[in-house]
Amino acid sequence: MHAFRREHDFLGEKDIPNEVYYGIQTLRALENFHITGIPISKEPLFIKAFAYVKKAAALANEQCGVLNREVTDAICFACDRLIAGEYLDQFVTDMIQGGAGTSVNMNVNEVIANIGLEYLGHAKGMYHFLHPNNHVNCSQSTNDAYPTAFRLALYWKIQSFKQSLEALQKSFAAKGEEFKVVLKMGRTQLQDAVPMTLGAEFKGFSTTIREDIQRLDEVKMLICEINMGATAIGTSINAPEGYPQIVTNILRELTQVPVVLAEDLIEATCDTGAYVQVSGVMKRCAVKVSKICNDLRLLSSGPRAGLNEINLPRMQPGSSIMPGKVNPVIPEVVNQTAYFVIGADMTITMAAESGQLQLNVMEPVIAFSLFSSLTYLENACYTLQSKCIDGITANVEICKNMVMNSIGIVTSLNPILGYEEASSIAKEALATGKSIHEITVLERKRITQAKWEEIFSMDNLINPKFINF
Image (cartoon, rainbow, N blue to C red; front, side, top):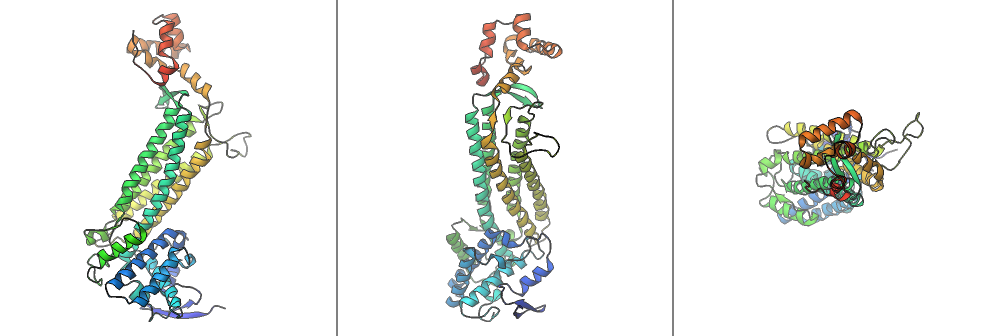
C-alpha cells in the first residue's frame, strides 16, 4: 500500500505518492503527455543544467535580498544533489509536451523543493516552508529558466559530440598516411577520371570532418547567449533590480560555461534562431559523414564483381540465404542515423518558424530533436571510427591494375598529344579493348617507351608534374 500526501494547484487537488519527490503539476503532466515514452531523465545533462540554473537563481535572489539564507541553503543543497546525478528517476515528464516546457520546469521546481524540505527537517509537500514557485522559481519563468538550461545542456552535448568527430577525423588522417603510396583511380560521375592515391582520398575525408569540427566551435559560442532574468516575456517582471546580470555572472562562475546575458531580452525570449543554426551544423555533419559512408560502400563493393579497392572489417554474416556474404553494416547504420538527423532538422525548422509573438511554445520538440540528433550522431561517429575506419585495409594491386587498365590515364597525354589525339586514342581503346599504352606507344608510336615511363612513373602518378615534349 502506498501512503499519499494531498497537494493542490489552482485546478484542484490530487493525491501524490509519499515516496516521490515531484508534486501535483508534474503528476498532471505525467497524465497528459504520452507522446515519446521518453522521460526527461533520459537527458541527465538537461537535469544537471536545470539544477545549475536553479542554484544560480537562488544565490542571485539571496544577493538581491529576496531569499533568506536558510531557504537559499536548502535550494543549493538540493541542486547539488541533482548536479551529482542523484534523483534522476524523479524526472518523469515526457520530452515532448505542451506548455513551452512549463511541466519540465515545474518537475524540477517540485523535486528541488521536496529535497530541500527534507534537508530542513520537514516532510515532502510542506510547501509553506519551501515552495516550488515562491522560492525555487523565484525571479524566474519557464520562459527564461527552460531555454537557459537547454542551452547549457546543448553546450555540453556539442562538446561531447565534437570529441567523437575528432576521433573520427584522426582515424581518417591515420589511414591517409597509411595509404599515401597506394595508387588508385579517381572517379567523377562514377566514371574513370585521373589517378590519385588512396591516401589522398582518406586525407580528404579527414579534412572535411575537420571543417565541421570548426563549425561546431563557432555554433557552440552562439548558444552561450542566455535570457536569464527575462522572466515571462523579456520585461523582467517580478525580478529584482540587477538580477539578470547577477544571475548570469553566478551561472557562468558555477558552470565555467562562458554564458553572457542577451542584450535584448524581449528578442532573446522569443527567438530560436540559435537552435536552427545548431541544427544546420548537425545536418551538415550528417550529410558529409553519410556521403563518406556511401563512398566506403562503393570502394569496398564486390568482392569479385565490384570495385574491391578496400576491405572493410567483416562484422557479421550478411545474409540468411546467401552463404559467405558480408555486408557493409557499419556504414549502413551510419547512413540511417544521418537520415534521422536530416529529418530532425526539418522538425526544428518548422518548430522555430511556428513561434508566435513573445514566445516560441515549440521549444520542447526542438530540445528533443537536438538532443536526439547529438546523441545518435555521436554514437554513430564512434561506431564508424572503431568498428570500421580503424580496420580498413587496401587491395593495393587491384587499385594499381585499375589505374593502368583505365582509359582515364589518357588525360596525362593531353599536354603532349593534344585533346583531339588523346580523344582518338581513348575512343579506339574503348572500341577495341586495347590499352592506352598499346595504341599510343606500340601502334601509333606517338611517344617513346621512355617518355611513357616518365609520364606514368609511380612518382608522377602520385604527385603529377607538367610533362611535354
